[in-house]
Amino acid sequence: MNNIDEKLQPIFADVMRRNHGEPEFLQAVQEVLESLGRVVAKHPDYIEQALIERICEPERQIIFRIPWVDDQGKVQINRGFRVQFNSALGPYKGGIRFHPSVNVGIIKFLGFEQTFKNALTGLPIGGGKGGSDFDPKGKSDGEIMRFCQSLMTELHRHLGEQTDVPAGDIGVGGREIGFMFGQYKRLNNRYEAGVFTGKALAYGGSRARTEATGYGNTYFVKAMLETKNSDFDGKRVVVSGSGNVAIYTIKKVQSFGGTVIACSDSSGYVVDEAGIDLDLLRDIKEVRRGRIVEYAQEKGGDVHFIPAEKGSIWDVACDVAMPSATQNELSGKDAKKLVSNGVVAVGEGANMPCTPEAVHIFQNAGVLFAPGKAANAGGVATSALEMQQNASRDSWSFQKTEERLASIMQGIHDTCAATADEYGAPGDYVLGANIAGFVRVAEAMRMLGVI
Ligand code: NDP
Ligand code: 2IT
Image: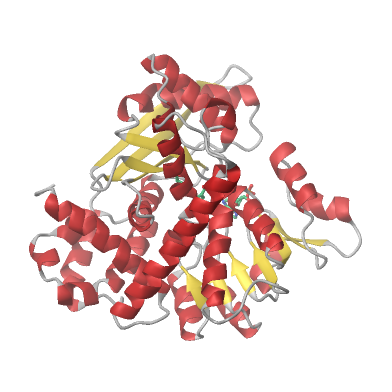
């Protein structure tokens, strides 16, 4: 069963009927609807005007074939997706994910979350997400390029700086964005810098975009700790993953005086009680595209690697947990362990990394809990700053861009906290984020007629 208000039960039943077989999408919708009971009590017209039903239905879904030729000359086929979820606040905006687990339900859940996240930034961006079941692991640069070009040969017709603006996500970083933007530019014969974000500085990227998601989550957790007169200084922190979000979370936590003692990839995790050596981690992950076990092998001493099948990174005792790998990576069992080990704050760097049971356990135990759609919004917010720089043919300093990011994150924190207070649930950042994001999108949609 669920905790959805009875007035909203028919809406959820309909969403389940229309999207069966898409558990992640239903999980994301359920979580938002569980927060909206108090909103419809105040605004019955959201139900009368079918605003909630409309927000749960993507505006457009594109599914396409991606044929490409591997280094052996063999033809390979992958499936591509772009879900253009909601454009009430601006052009569709959201990343592209390359991972073998990608399917339409995963991209829909991400596009749905993105819609509210983008609304929370206060910037003019709608919500969308894309991806492919392509597995970039072990592929050569030439294979990655041919794949990205083939993907863009279809996707380009659906994009545009005023229409739909992708960026990176799991498996998509600067290299892939360069290949996709390059192909878009050829096909359209236009230097339309604002059609992609996460670009390299050399061709229209923004300073601090690479760092933005991890830095932003760290600013958000810092703001939560401050409400309890606390900070990162001297705290033991565990960050899962070792990709873009994880690496820059580790960097910012360290600069605030915290010690990150563990990180991971899909094969397992490493524990380094002295604090993760960021230069070594970045060399392994960003330069060599290696595996996390190499960190333990190269560090030696007390540093050890635990394979994924032998244990969970959430068994490591810590004060702050920042899951930054993937959806549903932190279970109810993991949450119980973290609570029994004394965790005080959790900030979701990834999208929906904690299962609903885990969220419940944290909130019931009084742990400060920041949901991804608020805590990891710094990435997309800085993407919007990149679009702003492209539109004005400008390039800001790192300091100016980071200051904007920090103030946006403080603003999102304060909005979530104030909304939770207003709706009678002080300290509930999940409720605050869901309501504040939803109301912004719903109000814009209402003014635009029946769209
Ligand atoms: P990366 O591809 O750079 O890194 C992903 C990391 O997570 C890798 O360490 C990867 O390990 C691990 N991982 C991925 N899938 C799984 C899995 N199924 N099981 C265990 N580990 C896994 O991606 P990002 O850092 O960009 O993204 C991480 C999360 O943050 C995602 O949820 C993404 O949606 C979210 N996010 C990203 C933003 C961005 O700007 N990049 C913005 C906001 C949210 P391995 O290499 O072994 O696969
Ligand atoms: O999940 C996300 O917010 C992202 N992957 C970043 C999206 C973006 O457009 O910068």
